[in-house]
Length: 115
Image 1: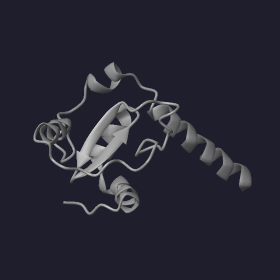
Image 2 (image 1 turned 180 degrees about the vertical axis):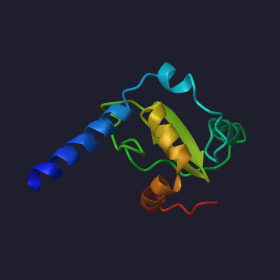
Image 3 (image 1 turned 60 degrees about the horizontal axis):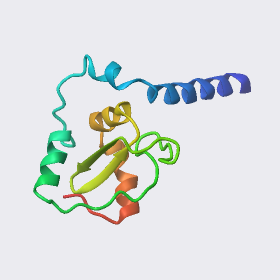
């Protein structure tokens, strides 16, 4: 029974690692139009309007928690007044598809309340 669980854990780890190794052209070629609250258009509008936001409290990616010392910050979002940083496009897409799964621990660490 134990080898089955360790094999499944290994497969899950590999799937997580390979999700962030796709290139920018692979992920944007057939990408649907992003209409989520945290879209890049909304983030740019917030930056342009100098909308106050709470700084991202961690030094790792919001989705897969890879340290930015290994992979630099590639994307940034402002979600309901909270800045969120990402290492790659697949992580941004994962966040955009279901931000509530990730924003809870970020808000708790930053002491921010969502707008």
